[in-house]
Length: 210
Image 1 (cartoon, rainbow, N blue to C red):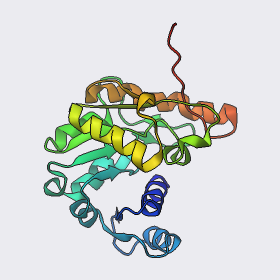
Image 2 (tube, helix red, strand yellow; image 1 turned 135 degrees about the vertical axis):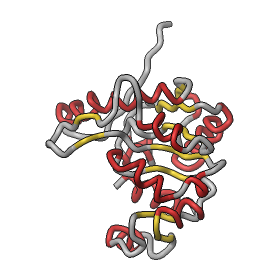
Image 3 (cartoon, rainbow, N blue to C red; image 1 turned 90 degrees about the horizontal axis):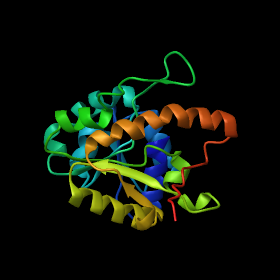
Image 4 (cartoon, rainbow, N blue to C red; image 1 turned 60 degrees about the vertical axis):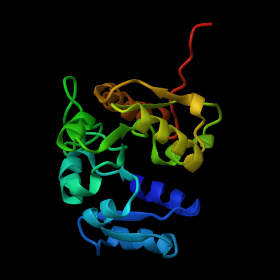
């Protein structure tokens, strides 16, 4: 769902998009390709990672590292990897639990395993409809990112504005990749807010003291 939403918005913006999955013949991929009238490409994780100047990880968090291994370290080397995935375990129902938390995060695991990728955790604290259209909500709201490389985070902040309409002043940089522990664990609250509010179309707005 997240990959489809991001891919569709980018195609509509005139970008070249290659969606990857375990199989180049996946029905989900074929359905997405039909939905964008053939204006994108689909294939394996490795083909998608090799194609992209920028790689976005919109995988199921429980299987993210497996998917990235299939993508191939050589295809991620030197590239910015925007990770929207969260380490959620839904095997026992809803609300989900975390596959990793407190002393580690999926983002840190990713950066350790792929040290030459430029990992930026972003877009993981909101629903995919809000990701690609922040104007869906009635007021300004905030997006939280983190990562080890300042230049990569600056590029991602710029792209979030160009691609999806996020205002740079509403993007909050928490710091290094270890700060993803907080943004990932926020999903424990986020899923419960979804239940209480009856919609996934909401987000945080950070209000500072005067």
